Length: 489
Image 1 (cartoon, helix red, strand yellow):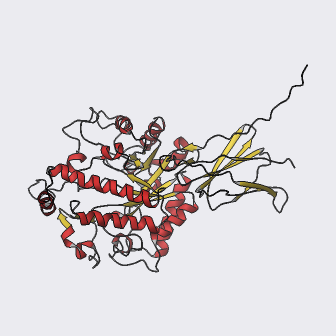
Image 2: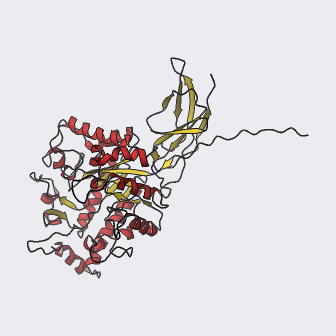
Image 3: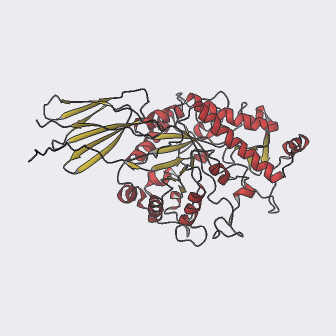
């Protein structure tokens, strides 16, 4: 009888959870940060640290920070003035000086959080802005590009100089800051404003429209407006990818492409972003001019028409280029003292709905304030009901699918001789964004996701049998784990 031999069983740790867990941090009108426009530098920084700490505690993995609410800057810029929502006066830097975006990026990355910079591409002034307009604001330097529209100032998307300027501003940030994403929201051409007779005001773009016609343009006025936005979207995507391909480009449009799509969305009452904002968001998705789409699905699950799951399913069906679908959810609707307030469980159920759908792997909360306030108990419910474990941001293999090398791992006793210090170092040329550190005790694996700057950890549990460490790239690609069997001292 031949001798039987037992082959060692390969130790394969489980794959970490994959889900985009984002939150918008709005600076316009001081919605989220800073809480008011005249805080000291230390107060601003303390508030931002509180936001990032809460995001990390809730097991979120991305913060989307508004850095350009109205042709202004919450960062050091040679192109646009400091935002009045930061210091109370447009053009006034924070004192003592610091760069809020640089600070936010550094502190987010310390916590393993992605930091996406959120820009408004066309809005030039919000009505909540009350200070004197700075001399270097575009309404002063190039008034011919800026239109008065209702209570707003708005760049004219039909002017080539506007498109060039917007791309220049955004790419300046991409080039100078270590951001993880560029984000734009639902404001393209402005939401319709009414005059004193309650009649909708048409956007005043006669000059740029006439230029287009004189140049031989043949599209009608509405299609031309849409094409102006399309061109900007495509150009931004190409510019970002040719400069820093790992920086994700995301758009968060109005949640309905057009009334009647899908059929349950009635034609009479639903707002038409395609016709009124000139936003052809389905086209951007189907052409792959973005890395993630976050339609603002700000409606309850149990609605007949604008139903969260019905709209989510429709958007997934349009995703022919297999980009990320990470819907925005209206967390700020929780617990408001009105007849339209939502219970916190509605948000939990919406996240569970997303988690249960193939083709959508994340959400973005609007906004940070209810999570800080624990409105309706939402900050307790999220880790309890839906964010049980830390999660990696889903990978973007269309950008780069190269896995990182296994790290080099070592073990040693600590100074007390009772605990084990685990150390690791990257190998290979692929930059590491995060580390996945997994420990096995019995049949249970415990997973921790750590920032790239951390290269050691203390193992307190003497029962740990195996340790697996893998690297994750800026594109979200996880490498093969280096597995170490713990010595039995």
